[in-house]
Length: 485
Image (cartoon, rainbow, N blue to C red; front, side, top):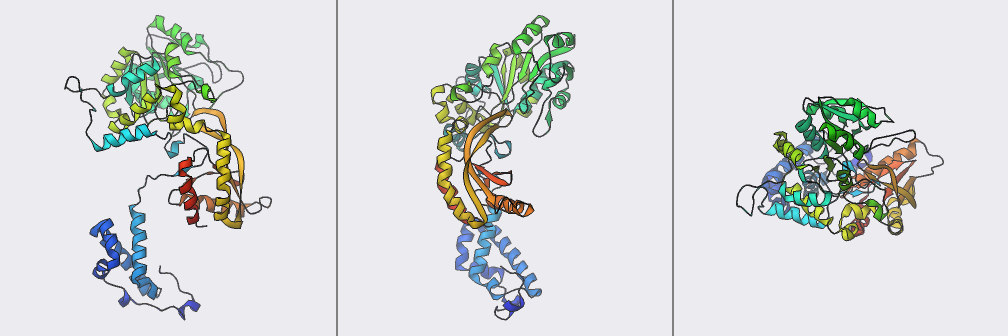
């Protein structure tokens, strides 16, 4: 490509002038250009040619144009790279080596093959999204997943919106507009993206009534706060933090005993939400949706793309009369999900009907339950490949580390894992120079054809192998030769 010419180069490099720059039509009619024309079309290719030739003219006027810049093969090569870069989709596949399985910024849960095939079918053919095949009349899109949701949770009815924040907003607006909602002060959470329970209450038109203290809330706090204007007692899962020490909270069953005589519903925002007991796979325990319903919750909201392992969605399950009121809210239409979400959600839910196969078939659970020895072996296989690609400026070791579930699910629990740790130069001498070297490497990995995302901590770049599927190892190895440091 064109660039500044040094004095030494000026004596050996043929200088080109503006008259050497080919016309647009000539470039378009070159034999070597025809594959680009067939791939990108005349409109895109013509625009790219004109833009590049304009740059060459600027370089020519500045005396920076050399003969190689106007060579046909050089032109075609540059145009091909420019068009490929311009055509690259912004949402791209990448390697998540951060150690966070359900990484919000990286798309959270990965869908199992059953869901992928269902989405492809929904994309390529018409479907009965809101068409009742039994009666031939208009149907309800919630019916596509309601039966299986009720079977898995023990709820009477269910509905689906686009995420759990929307589920909470819709529930509050439907049942508590211009009324009071009683919540423990210790559960007034803020999650990523500045989603705060007090703010969502306000947007929903409900009045928040805080009770108790940050660390301790008693049944009497709820009982004393109930007034004729109360709409519900609400519990919120502290999804991204934990309070320890001198603490107390009120369980759902106790709240149900307080609420029923007053004719008030008990609602629970479980946040991530799980449909199965995770301890059977050696994972930290988490209250399931079914347990929450059994304890007396009238409505439960939870996410589809976290521990459940499905697409982004907000699920509301519980009493049929309350679900019906929610579905009549005009906001429901604004927050409803499309056919692709429902197409992906149903097969994921149906995997739970055969729990003995779940750890094998549900991608999220498979990644969460990967054996540390298996991950260790994978890291050892990749150690030499990465070291060779990085050369002597970096030192790569395979080390034990800890993964986390992510997306607010079980925030204080860690999963033993293994991965690659990259250090720059002599860490003992450390300093800004080594920090810059790690920053350069982290950026170079992000610029690979399939970006590799790790994390920098403790003067090293950590690449946790937990989420690196063995089927992707070949691609991971191959593209390391494209690293540009």
